[in-house]
Length: 262
Ligand SMILES: C[S@@+](CC[C@H](N)C(=O)[O-])C[C@H]1O[C@@H](n2cnc3c(N)ncnc32)[C@H](O)[C@@H]1O
Image 1 (cartoon, rainbow, N blue to C red):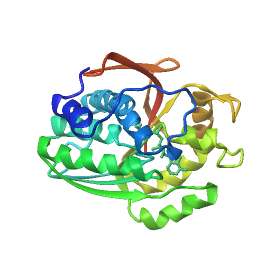
Image 2: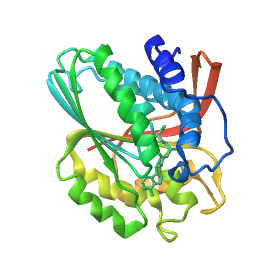
Image 3: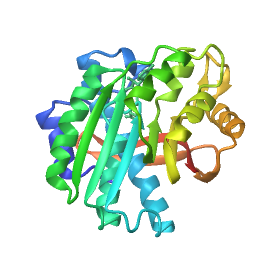
Image 4: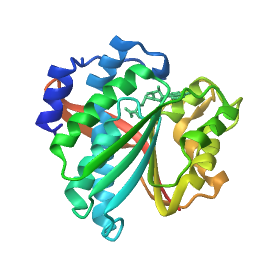
């Protein structure tokens, strides 16, 4: 698929994003302003494409989901520069014409990423029919116990919760003292979903040297411990997504994803 023209122009020309790939097991939480511009030019379009494709297929197969809604609420755990939010909002704009307002809470621990995300979401408003209300939350989560700090930030329930390639960073940094990070984060997030709400987890598929486990296996173990209802998932071990933009033809990402319905 193609990155929309306006978005391509905006990130590469107005914001000065760069295309520059990094090694596996990256931890973006620590990245400075220049690193995050590389992130925006390299990984933002991938997350955009993943969210766009997964939600397009889901909403086309589940035509009743959010069909009559005029207002929708979204929470992103570890939004970074927010490619997945822009992808999801683009799909909602195309497939859910009744929407009048979408309220977002976008959480991340990296201030540089949130600054760029704020600029992109402000620009997106010029290209979308419904009204976007965005609330950005700068919350670096140190350990397992910090998750409860979030109860103050997220004091309501959401129709959709998404987390793209963020939980792997908790695993790499062993932030939950050998506990399964997917299990704990999903246990924490599920009560924040409305009934029939959707939780989409997307993550890289690599072998993690810290947990000494393949991440999709760890994700599945975590989800089965929470007894979550997985309503859709990638086929096989991973799913490939391709995105073309001015800096790369058919840039390829491989991820594992699980859609949970409450
Ligand atoms: C690989 S990036 C993914 C960003 C975005 N979801 C995407 O797909 O483009 C992981 C994000 O998780 C955030 N993150 C990682 N560990 C975190 C922590 N302990 N507290 C808050 N945010 C964290 C990082 O700052 C980073 O923006």
